[in-house]
Structures are given as C-alpha cells and as structure tokens.
Length: 222
Image (cartoon, rainbow, N blue to C red; front, side, top):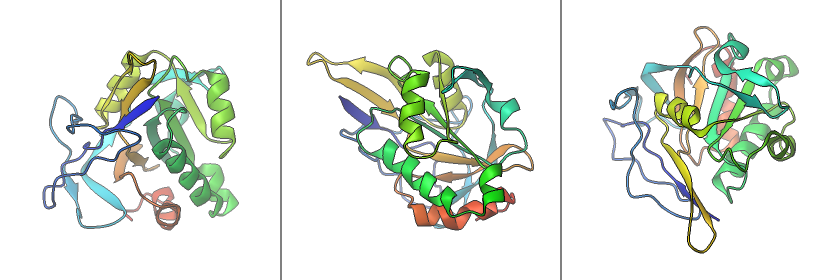
C-alpha cells in the first residue's frame, strides 16, 4: 500500500507555495481547486495554525452512508453545528490516523457541552475498502462520536473538490499495492452560517487544534 498526500487546496497569496506532505509517497502538483478551477482566497497567510479564508466554502452537498450503515446528509445533519471535515482513508499509514488522533485529543480537552456540539466528519477517499464496519472500528479507536462516511467515489471526489481538496481514485499497482492520493487539509465550518471559514494544513498539532476549537465553536476567527 502506498499513499500520496496532495496539499494545495489554497493559494497563500502572500506566502510561498504550499509544500506537499508525504504519506508514504509524494505528488508532483497541487491540483485542487475551488469551484471551477479558481483558488481560494485567504487572509492571515502567516498566521498559524489555521488559515482564515477570505471567501468561505459552502458545505458540500454530500449524501453518503455513515459508519453505522445509515444514510447521512452532510448539510442537513451538521446544520448549525461546528464541524470539522477531513478526507482520507483508514489504511493510510501516517497522516490520516495522526490527524484524527490529534482531533480526538483536542476535542477531549473541551468542556463536555462543547464536545457535544462539535461534529468531526471523516469522508473516505478509498470507499471500496472503507466499509461502515471498518470506519466504525478505526474511528472508534480514537473517538466513538466521530462520523465516518463512505459511498460512491464520484460524489466524494466532487465534494472534496468543492472545498478545495484534491483526491483521486485509488490505483492498484503492478506489485499489488494501492496508491491513494488525497488532500491533507482539515476544514472548519462555523455553526452560525455552516460555511468553511478556517483551513488547517497537515502537521497542525493537537495543542493547536485545542487552542482554536473554542473559537470555531463560537464562530470566531482563531
């Protein structure tokens, strides 16, 4: 199994070009875009860890199957909730489990009332292997409240691209390994308008997420 992580959902106009984050491999380009090919505008490019988007992303119109085998409408079932969205896959050797573990650690530091408000959604980029049962087992080891979504690859890819995350269909190599290319960004949606206002790149730590989550929950820029 090999993974290529593709970052580049956002053009940091005032900063240098985004570096690619490898997860057992590397990719030769950014390739992800907002809408019909335009790049997202951002403010505070030198601010860490989150980047505030000048033009927030609409929440993807995505209807899939959740990790309990039930239909899940992302827009309707996270409406009015602070929501963190990540595209990845459970066989990923490093960046996916690291990111989700960091989110679990950060969430655990919140007061219980805020934990109950937060929705963390993991959408698989490898739906053939990531069945509901597999998602439940994998996510449950981190936080049983995390929501895993699986289904047809085409709408998953379209949803990812709508929020500037590039993913490609898994490819089986001649040696039997599977290459999965996906973005490593976490997108934070504010509850007041259900739009993605803040983007976190691969490498954001649990401490950094924990610092920002109370503001995300209040629909405030970190």
